[in-house]
Length: 372
Image (cartoon, rainbow, N blue to C red; front, side, top):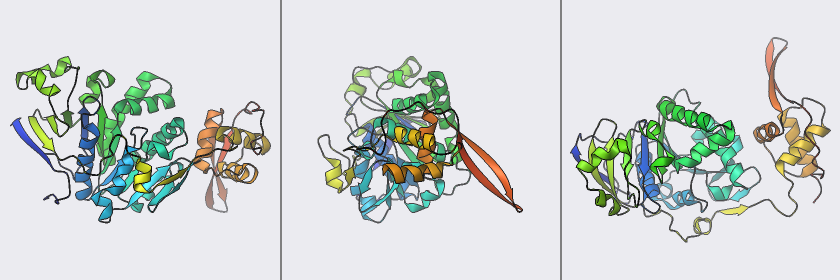
């Protein structure tokens, strides 16, 4: 497909083993380089190709400054691609674009848009963002049938590992799960774009699963032992001289090439207030806003044993003035030691699924959630 004039181009001159990425199929791109080397811009360029080939893009992790929101001023959105902003349960977002609490996202919501953005400024706390991203990943990986690929951007691989570590509580289990997600992503129709600062942050097991390994300016770092053969073709000082639009690329088929890409004109600059620039207004909890975990705890103590998450959410809305989805209630209840019990009952030949939160009573929190 010929690129439109206002799209960032991506060109490779192969030293050997030449092949081209297929942006109509789910592929894994792993980009390594120092801070400021253009890793995020490269992944945005790849994502731009996926959008133009009819795919969808999910921009997940990013820096705290919300660089993913820069998509809202991209030519893709200006020309009609629909953007959806995913946010925390306690955050109110006002925008001309569609908004949705991340806790309510389901696979059917993929029909809402072409570009889904989950940016740090749209969450009340970093922990809330990690919880949301874990859930979003689980939902995406549950795809069984697909027609168009979804390209998922994860800026800094360590964030993904850390998010699964928070969920699993064990570093080896978190790494094993990341390996599984990368290995099985193709079956769910998911392409992955992951970047990292250091080779030590993401070892050879994970690198071996990438369809494309993209090397940017490495700064003081050198290539790991398993990649030192690249120095036979490219001098070590050359890596330290790479400009942000230049890269070295290795394919899973054994190819090695030199590349150049056009920096996306919409990419966020370092000192830019991206919320103001894109017209997104965010209202954070404050001024006596109760803590969601505490609110769920008081609701569970006040309601009869085994309440449905939906009933807990209704109680919190009525008594604490806080909007929580049933899915968010489940997440916070698990933090308090509760578990979700699902039962199936026969109602005159029609089966009905019932959810109940069961477990020991949480410890007293001391403060009423309805107080300000």
